[in-house]
Image 1 (cartoon, rainbow, N blue to C red):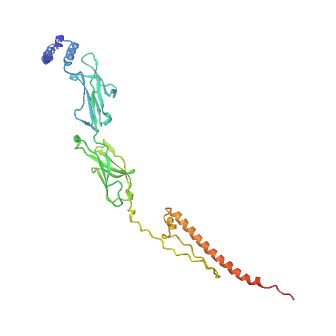
Image 2 (tube, rainbow, N blue to C red):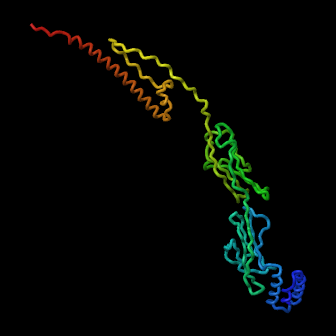
Image 3 (tube, one colour):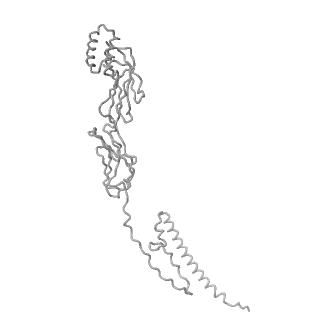
Length: 332
């Protein structure tokens, strides 16, 4: 009878299945367990696999739980159940027919299958289920931090930092929380707003900023790349106008004078009107500028001292000159 069934056309399959089912039911008391098992396996082989891996039908996203079940035909008992991903075993063989991941990540994507041994009926031959492709989709991309109107604002102007990302349409009802960071500290803790306001920017607000987007259960969280914020000081366009040097008088001709020279004129100090000292006013190092001022003061004092010394020498020369013109003394 089994041989004739194997050569029937596909259109008669349902009829044969029904008749064979009746025969097996009626002869259940006279057939041995092995013959009954073999007949059932033959009948099942016409329309089903012995072992299948059951997986979710809906799309799977980051953060979802994943449950896979190794199911035998007619829920026959199994032993030595093993689950695989991309050909690698995910654990030792055992009696559990389910494999679960509490929070899936994109790295959990792959081809899964299971293998098991039928404990009864039959001799206990091992079977392997066909592979099932599991693809874990991204719940949301890593956020991008944007500064408006600019990442180089003027001091005193407002700045808005936006942590931008997007949920898929299938999970549009989900809720994300956002937090903002500067350098190594938190500037705003997690909250529903994706924006951080700086009403009046100052140089203290300059630094490296980034943001973080996370699910409410904190199972999935992602950080943005860092953005450098550089607050500019007041504009240098309002600098003071350039001062022109005063016109110089022509030098007077040299004249000889018998009058003793008076005190030497003091050295001129550098000013913004003197082109020769314009570079000194622009010395970036204030300590060097101070040292140059002290040196100029000492040179001025030395020049005054030399003037007094010249005057003293001339006075001394005037006192000694009459004594040298007298004749030799006469002795009686």
